[in-house]
Image (cartoon, rainbow, N blue to C red):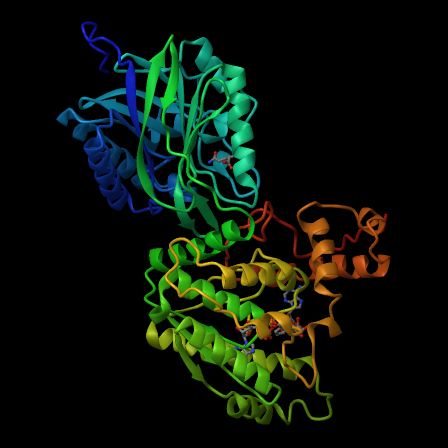
Length: 564
Ligand SMILES: Nc1ncnc2c1ncn2[C@@H]1O[C@H](COP(=O)(O)OP(=O)(O)OC[C@H]2O[C@@H]([n+]3cccc(C(=O)O)c3)[C@H](O)[C@@H]2O)[C@@H](O)[C@H]1O
Ligand SMILES: Nc1ncnc2c1ncn2[C@@H]1O[C@H](COP(=O)(O)OP(=O)(O)OP(=O)(O)O)[C@@H](O)[C@H]1O
Ligand SMILES: NC(=O)CC[C@H](N)C(=O)O
């Protein structure tokens, strides 16, 4: 392994490039190419060193791909090609890759310069909660890491969770002589996460006394959205620089050694999106990357004139462009004139293709085929679900014919209580609003009407007609139906659900907040009951601390009800 030549004086100025990029899980050669382009760009900006994000070569999180020896070998081969590139005298690299060593398979980084590997470091603290499952596939690093000497600068490289956990990785690095901490991350978005990250890093800066650079991945990977927003904290705990959120960038930040402390020189200070804006961008990027990374040319959705499908349509146009969304109104006898007008106005405002395919014939056809079997029974939910299922069949037929993916539109309130039809409106490949409660869907609709999101491909202005926001929500599966016939008002429902899902509160605690005991008990019951539906539901963008997916693993067969 190469050492800094003793006759070379150590750097007193370090131009650090942060590669806040969007790798694709499993696309090893594509990620290597991306890394090479970033390094070239960084070289053009005069960088000494390029910091890539966690497991960049593999894409994060690679999950069980790591159990395939062929995958791990291919990642190491690609990482070594990047190491060889550094022989050109350009910037060195800190590149993340899985590595198989005698101590096991590690979530690792390779530090390279001048065509040589200066060091390898392995993640010690493997996150195994919420969306993370790293203990399943990786072994923790066998020893506390020491710093790596890069051109005379002793750099400490904790890897992501190493700065969140209690193992004292940063302190140990400081004790063993590190001067600066550079952290590659794969840190997914949830609402309010930026504050948590800043606090986490500041805590480590206080404990180690060292400045820290936090580099985060960008882009959607199945349910997760990595929001970038890389930043640095000075040794005095002030913000050294802040890169933009939800945007790819290769940014060079200059650090100078002053009285043996590294200080950032004029770092960029991006303004971060907040609240609805951040949620909207996460939903948009999550949908865009799901569709593009999985090779779909177009998407199709049922546009009902209601709020959920209107917001999904806006997200689809913003994510992909109006020419890639096909919106279809599928009216039946309960579809109101108002819905027809609203759906058309929404499609026109968005500029997407809009068709009307009435479902009366197929629905009557099913009913006629079932007439003997159903003779003597009462009309009810079965006939209602047939409408939803017929729509689902038609949307899937369009998807099959034109290779477009069905966007499914159930919000978190509906997914919580099972207010959706299996193999009906639950059909679809991906759901951009799956982790937004109904009231939050209204909020982002209002926000979108007033703002054009950064990077959106759709038009500005009122893309969701206000009547869609103002009217009472209805599934229109029978005469004069509204959602509130079978569910409590959404502000009440959403609050109870947040208490049960995100906060794991007891029924009694929720009642103490002022909710009716029978309502809370009914919602708790519906929440448990609908687990079977959620297991069959499409994936969707994670927005909260606890989404329906790997964050929340309840049994389907479950007799527990909290009556304590
Ligand atoms: N534990 C379990 N494990 C596996 N499967 C289970 C099951 N329990 C029932 N099932 C199966 O599931 C079926 C019931 O589920 P499903 O067929 O979906 O029907 P179901 O849940 O009975 O009805 C759909 C509900 O969604 C509402 N909806 C529908 C359409 C749109 C909207 C909207 O908000 O836009 C709302 C509708 O008003 C109704 O309340 C049963 O017939 C049974 O086959
Ligand atoms: N008439 C319709 N035409 C096209 N799609 C429909 C129609 N009715 C329902 N859908 C589809 O099924 C989903 C479930 O919708 P439904 O109208 O039953 O209730 P919702 O949850 O209030 O949704 P939305 O607010 O979009 O209406 C809709 O989002 C839409 O994609
Ligand atoms: N990849 C990781 O180790 C990420 C874990 C960390 N707690 C985060 O969410 O950012």
